[in-house]
Image (cartoon, rainbow, N blue to C red):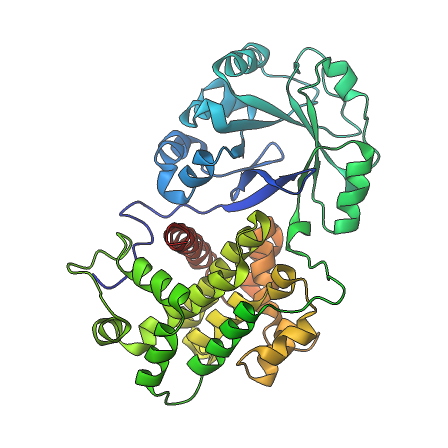
Length: 420
């Protein structure tokens, strides 16, 4: 088998996974947002399919973060809670997000929530300024989340909860400044796209290892490359050659015999396919071992694969799939490296128009693709629907590509991390 296993024989399920950071900027957990809207909440699966989908979700990249002690937050409406759908998730790692404060509460909801708590689940309340949370529903240890763009929150909730284990979660944090402001208010958990935004480090310089990776990227993009010279360049870097061979010999590929050398890998796979995987290996090696940069790197891999799949499906755009893979792969390098993108693009083997796209120039032709990607990553389903129509894309195909890219990136990062 020469194709990577992206789904392990399981059906593709669409959702976007958003990290939740704590006050130390470590990853506390992930929230899963899907495409079904009920009662103000976005559900991952239609109600009748929820239990099956959640219980078979280990291939979705959830098992690995759970093993690292990370929480998984999923939204459920009252019907889902009353019918026991949250029990498909393991209690020690799961947070049930519920919308409270409506005029009518479903009979039995309070008892159902108490049973969930007793089983080890945490409860997250979505608090709205104009809809107070009924006192009877919340309990010590619950998490209270606020969208700070909707008004000033009631910060007396922690005292009302009566327990120091209760925490405040700030939602939809877009900038590092908003993160700092929420932290000063007493919030302990933070969710939103701010983690993708760059923070420039004054006088930051690339290390020799990082410069070497950029040089290899340049070699890979030479027209009609001398494969033997490239193989020697890869072999001269022990870290890269070890990671690449470990990855290719992993269960992810399932080759009958181990690949012993770069030359053999080229012979079996072909240069074009090996080149794509080598680009990803180089990128991961460029990032380092810190938790949040590696999360951003995994997202970058997902972006690259999504763009590649989109270009292959809609080839009438005339975009080169490998070129779009690099565009997505490099799109968050300023965040990862703490350097301005203007400086980074000079090191990249890309055309002028691609560099303009990475700099986010307003008139670059790839801007609609990044807008599409942004709507998927933040769970803006209304914008996603509008963009797919404007770009003449099939919404279900777009969702399927996003899910496939997510699974591929998660599997790649897990395998390459194991070779570290």
